[in-house]
Amino acid sequence: MSKTLEISPNALISKKVLDRYLALELPANKVMATYIWLDGPALNIRSKDRALDFVPKSVNELPIWTAGHGEGDGTTSEWYLHPVKIYRDPFRQGNHILVLCETYSGDGKPSVKNRRNKCAEIAAKCAAEEPWFGIEQEYAFLDFDGHPLGWSKNGCPDRQGVENYCGVGAKKVYGRDVVEAHTRACLYAGIKLAGTNAGGMPAQWEYQIGPCPDVTVADDLWVARFLLYRIAEDFGIVVTFDPNPMEGEWFSSGAHCNVSTKSTRAKGGITAIHTAIDKLSKRHDKHIKAYDPKGGKDNERRLVAGCATSSIHDFSAGVSNRSASIRIPKTVADNGCGYFEDRRPSSNCDPYAVVSVILSTICLNE
Image (cartoon, helix red, strand yellow):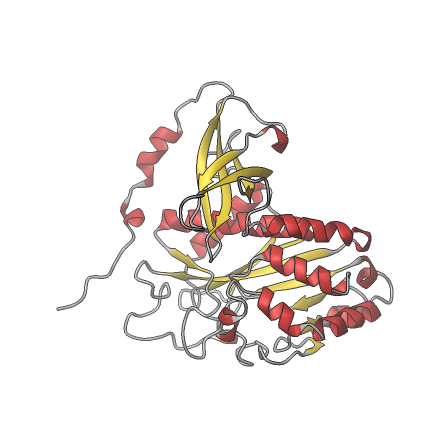
């Protein structure tokens, strides 16, 4: 007797019914604000909605809110949600908004998971170097039963890598409808999304955020993750940012970080790039600990010196080398200035932590 496959209940709900209610006219100046924040050991994205009686012109007009959290023993189970950034809401549209929040404890101090606050402090110290970042967020789609989307339940795809990377065709890519919806939603929201492409493993995709200033790239990456989860929810598809969603010799998922400063972008900036790489080489262990939520444990499954990854144990760098810790793009080497790519951050990294440790190393020598 064959086993019944699990299907997300969301995939069975007719979205046309919802359209009837979304078409209802709301009272003047009534705005729904979706507050978004990070919580838990794995940095889960959480959200809840608040009805406002005005159209906010600035994030400073938004009220501080509270939310329960999963930290501690339950005796102090609330955080204060401090709005820090407003995005347009692609689901409700109109004047409705998404509100990115920092979390604070009752004593007014940033919560233990609020790495944005520290990132902003470090970025302020490095402002003279005008650092810019771009992050390439890889992820994979899963069926509701946890199996990669589109894969046979009794086996694996015939090919991966160059056959599927940036691929086109029903046998090479799965889930493009979700990707298209996510792209439009990000651009509507005001996120600096630069592009998308299919990954090396079937059902694996990537979107790029940036180039943006330090904290902004992390803000946009988190809200883009939120949008991806929400949109995939509508399709009844699961999104995973696990660095190695399939055991075996399959392409893993990272969050490659492209970095430049005023010095690296200037004429002859290749010298500054090599100086930055030298600093990074001396703090490899520190960066590995900061590049995934488990202090390197997730990246142990990913950085295996295969499938376009470096070894987690060794630091390396090279021009046009996608199997190195740090890649200098060929165009940068040819032009003698530009940016470099740190390929070590995992797909489930906290971008605030990544930006912070990179700036600390290359600009503050810490």
